Image (spheres, rainbow, N blue to C red):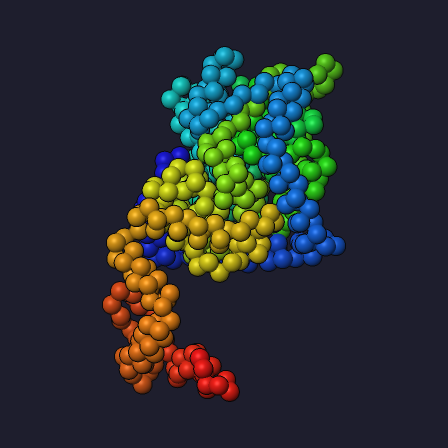
Amino acid sequence: MQVTSMHFKARAGQKLADLRLQENLKKLSTKWVAGRAQAILELDDFEAARNDAVARRNRALAELDVWLERFEQEATRRGAVVLYAETPEEASQLVVEIARRHGVRKVTKSKSMVSEEMALNRALEAAGIQPVETDLGEYILQINDNEPPSHIVAPVVHKSKDEVSDLFARVHGRPRLTDIPAMTREAREFLRPHFLSSDMGVSGGNFLIAETGSVALFTNEGNEGMCTIVPPVHVAVTGIEKVLPTLDDLAAIARLLPRSATGQSISNYFSILTGTRAAGEPDGPEHMYFVLVDGGRSALLGGEFQDMLRCIRCGACMNHCPVYQKIGGHAYGWVYPGPMGSVLTPSYVGLEKALDLPQASTLCGECHVVCPMKIPLPDLLRKLREKQLNRGLRPWGERVAMAAWSFAASRPGLYRPMVRLASRLLRLAGGKDARIGALPLVGGWTAQRDLPVPRGPTFKEQWARRRPDGRG
């Protein structure tokens, strides 16, 4: 997927002006935010469950190489082939080579964000192989001129039922339907022949299990089973950080993932796939491959951003983010939107290609509060902002302003009278309404809202009056 994060500001402005998008995004708070809040109440001790899951993920990451080697040994012993790719491009080439080796002409795909990193569909098409997205949301996007997903769990959350109805009528050439079950049935009728004629299935992988050489998949549609069991070849693509040591670790995290993602106690479908079809088994692939992608992940190990590798891709941070709730995912310009994307994108593709993303946050802290893996997203965003400033990647005016503020703030004798003077000047500028409609240097704020002015004395002045010694 092409990186367009450098256009974040322009795209965000367009999304804010899109009234239909604003209406469509309301379902984030009315459905998933409320659903998560209710679902975690089902756990006897949510914080204890979360702390346990965090500890398990940290243990896996602390010895990632050990568990990857164990996974490869067990997966190989059960008939699978494990391949590693340093870059997403290498991963795509590996999948294309697998397809060519088996004479594949059509690939059915289950939803996978790593395959979006890999631009896998484009690579398959370039090799003369037809990719078919079978997740309903991804299918809708594919037939809509290969539109990228806007959410990692619900890729088509930015569209309304009416928009999908119009799309189906145009692409399928059938009478327009507005009943959701009927529309789902129509999509199923178009996808079923692809399932039955597919030569290879591609899935993602929520987790890899080292002790059994398995891949675990959480889904809400039956398409995943049709992609992984029906075709003679199954390829699972996922990041190297997704490995867990044991099935017990998987069980612990499985209590949190669906609750955090969609507010469900458990996903509709939960699969643990191990090896190729054995003698006497009625289904399963004859050939199974794992393509494990680095793509910048190993560079985070042992560093100040390693906490991001705990991410289980639940989407809770974006569901609760006030910025994402207003602009959706496409404005972020790459595979991962929202707060997690604002850290991952600069980490994976380079800070200079995503200058605005660390700023695309109010730092309200809600993302950290709801993250089941307790990833300190606001702290990581602040660290990225510091890196930008230190590397001279922010506008010169901003750098000068920050340097001036730092100079004054570190000198109380200068800072306090400046604050008192600024407070009185703003009060005068606000007039009797005590609000400022336009102000130099902060036009981005006053263009959309008035700036309330300070009322009364400064905090220091009030504090000095309360202290017996009169000192501020």
